[in-house]
Image (cartoon, rainbow, N blue to C red):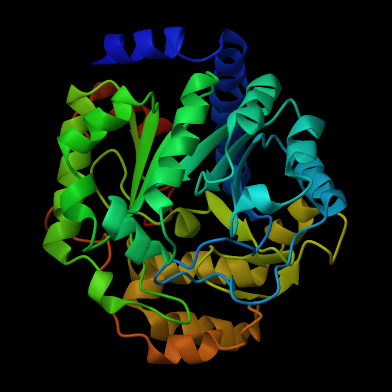
Length: 397
C-alpha cells in the first residue's frame, strides 16, 4: 500500500504542488508540532493548527448545520486574515484549515493564499465553485488543498444538503481538481443516511479512481439550531467506522484522515489537547467550531498568540473537557459546556442568538469515547505519525 500510494503522489500531482505539500505542510507541520510541545511545557497553549471560518455564507442548507447560513453572510476581511496568519507564522505555524460556510464564496480568499506562499491551506468546501479556472489557479499557487465534502449518493446528498444535483456538482469539482493535478481530498460527515454507502471499500476505491489523494471520515455532531438526532450514529457504528478506517489504511493507496483517536486507539478531542482552536467569521476565538461562545476576539489585540496563550476561558475549556471525557464534551456533557460558558460570561457568537437555548435543549449522547473497546493503529506509518505529531499531549494524565 505504501509504495502504491507513493507512486500515486509522485506521478499524479504537479511536481511543484507536491513540493509545496511536502515542505509547507509536511516539514513545517512537524516543526510546528514540535514547537507546540515545547510551549506546553511552559504552560503556553498556542495551537499548531488554526481553523478559520472565513465566511458564514453558503449555497447549501445542510441538515444539522451549525453555521448561520440563513442570516446575512459575514466574512473576515483580507486585512484581518493576513494579520492573523502573519502573527501565527511568527510562532512557527504554517498550516491553516479554512472553513465556512463555503470558503470559496470569500472574494479575497485567493489573495490570502497568494500573500502567504510559505504556508499551507486546507479548504473545507462543497466543491461547487471549483471549475478548471479555479483549479488551475490553485495549481499555480501550489499551497492549497481542497477538501471536498460528499455527504451521500445522488438522492441522499440532495436531501442531506437541501439543494438539487449536489452530488454531481461536487463530483465536477473533484474532476476539475484531478485534471489540474492538485492534491485534494474528500470529507464525509458520517451519519445514518450515508454510512452504508460511503464507509465502504467500494466507495474508497471509486475515490481513488477519480484521483482523490486523501479521505476524511468524521462523525456527525448533533448541534446547531436545527439538530437532527435521527442522523446520529450509535456507539457500535462509531466503532465500526474506526475499525473500517484502521483496516482500509492497510489495504488501499489513499491517505485516510481522522481526528478523534490516537495511535493506541484511545479517543481524543483536538480542542481538549490544545492542538486546535477556531476563529469565527466575526473574529471570535472559540474552543472549537461547534462551541459558538467566546470571550476574546482577534480584534482585541494585535497578537493572536498573546490572546490565546493568556485566555483563561480556553484554558478552562481544555482542562475541564479533558477531565470529563476523552470524547466530545459538547455531545456528552452539554451541561458542563453551559457551566463553563456561564462561569466566564462568554458571549453567544452566532447571529441567531439562540446558542445557549440550544445547549439547554441538548440530550447527552455518546461520542467517540468508548474506553472498553480501543482499536489501535495497525499500519506502522499512521501509528508513527500519530504517536509523534497527533496525540494526547498530556491532556488526559
